Image 1: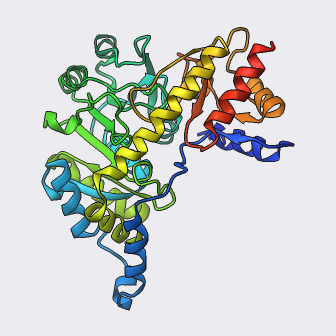
Image 2 (image 1 turned 180 degrees about the vertical axis):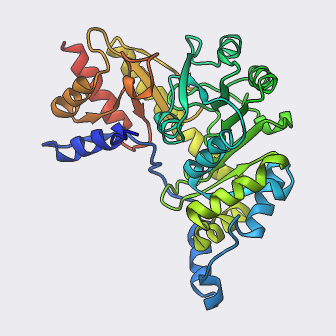
Image 3 (image 1 turned 90 degrees about the horizontal axis):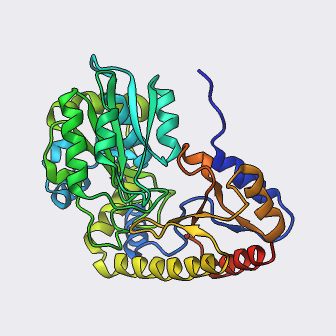
Length: 368
């Protein structure tokens, strides 16, 4: 099997080696402070007994699993704490190939590229289904793609890279189509705290036996380096996933889990509201500059990414590098995210220099 270096790293390395000042809008690393309770939890943990520096339970600290289960209104024995949402997605996707299903994975295009990478890693065959023009889930078209060879459908809402928030009825339709073909549906909800529309509803409310929901706190608590995620499995699928998690990772960091638990218990909802307000302000200023540049763009209902298309400037890797070299703004080529938006460039709005990047882009394309 052939593996390539993810294009995220390629662009970041190119930007790091470039001459001059480059504004990084490549990856989704929140630039704001984590909840104060994260530091409190770590400080308190440093004073704990030596026994607490040893292996935690493989499926996660009991208190953290209970906290998540209560928040998601599920039984605690359905929750596994993972090394970030990335491992949660891996466990969930791998579970689809454990039984006698097909090898096809239906992915929504544009697609977060690590779903494609995991599909290849697991020996699956990707099948891309384009979204509606506004980035929303095209339920009927997705159902048409689900067949006897389908093992898995992967959804992500709020979505990276389109910013779309999928309506629950569309998700329900896809889940029912998948169930009719004995296929699983993984719904990645890692951006659930970044819903600007007020329409987000978790797929867990469907209470379907073929749905696995993944999430984590890397984005919502601005702690991508802590690697604390989780997966919520149907009861019939949980034990095999626990075994795989133990074989791959043994367990997830005990100090990080304890700090996250403290933050869950002590962080006011105002923390998350302030992050949403900050991002909405950035979206407004960035898209206003794209208007100046004459660009087409997506206005996200969730997450913190904007896709933009500039006239006579397709979103190729070469043109992404041109923007790095000529104006010091680093985005991601649309082809990284599948086949539906290859003319577009994705920008992550998790930098305090969004306004400066917007001004550079507006000036550059005004002069072309």
